[in-house]
Image 1 (cartoon, rainbow, N blue to C red):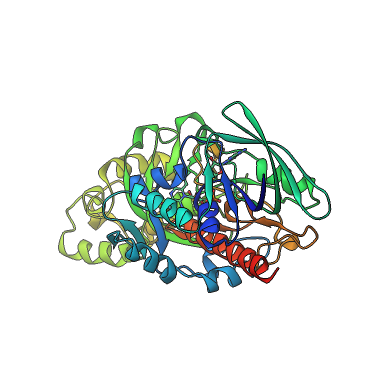
Image 2: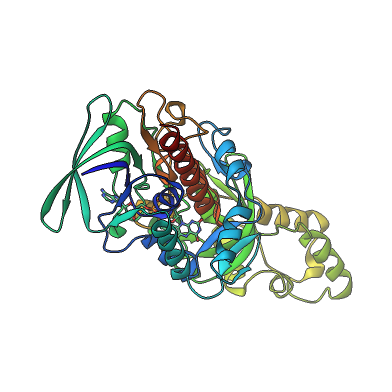
Length: 398
Ligand code: FDA
């Protein structure tokens, strides 16, 4: 079979690319259904983009790489597409946009766009071999026990990263990239809960509160959740992408920075109140009970017993709680893979490999990773659209 473009992976980026590709396009995926991560994302409502998506919200060895694609297919373009398909949406918090009804609406929308572009979609299909003869790619596919030989001018790597192997994540894009001489940077789990030894926070499991989490010079003000295995919640997932193994994270339990003044004011009005009673107005009671043991903070006596220096020391301890995680839950639960195919070898405008004509790399497989909050899908849409448009320009110009 002779086609123009073979897209490996019918996830967010692969389907978006197919929707923008002219010519004969085939998208393959080894899963039973396309867009499985879209379906389960955002608690089943898909946080499909972010109003504030901008290059500063992405991690990469080359922070400039994502600018071109993000600038040419923006969150507003995706919102327009969602609206054209009549999908109702809402902003939840921090610019994060979700479907009102179901993430399945986004999968259905992309499937419809793939069909509209005239592309074929083969599910439960595997790639068993790939070569390039100097002008075209020869792919050997296996579908329902049958072999198919496909000749394609372009091949698009859209099989994503390594996160959640149970959902079918594989390292195929990295393997093919290496086969054609591209470098792959070291990968690790991102947007992932932290683990601590000996069930350090097991007694606090389920407690959540707003914090500021800092690591690697970056801070996020969001909620933190104690779990049986360690720390989770948006603040921890965000900061996990900036954390280096063996280093501490700093948790500020008073992110508004008002506790010291509040406690001093309360001392003059209600000096006979226990310090712990006053703190319980600001922090969860279970956490207060655990603080002396967890942070070394002294929480005895009435408010009137506390000098300014004692209150200042206490607030300082609560604002600079240093914790060194034992590790993370890894790819088993990570939302994304940090690192990936080195952007040095790829054109930021077209997503085509510089030294391997017709080979395109998009989505999470590339060394571009977004924050939590719809940024990673925006990268998938933008990089997919960039490659699709470049292929269309090439196909129509031929
Ligand atoms: P994606 O993983 O979407 O697609 C890859 C496709 O390739 C899959 O269909 C897979 O089956 C296929 N494939 C893999 N290996 C193959 C092989 N060897 N042969 C054939 N096919 C193969 N982001 C966000 O912005 N908002 C959100 O709400 C969420 N929520 C979220 C929840 C959870 C639980 C996870 C794990 C992740 C998220 N994300 C997210 C991240 C987001 O899902 C992710 O960044 C994008 O799906 C990446 O899009 P890609 O198309 O690159 O990969």
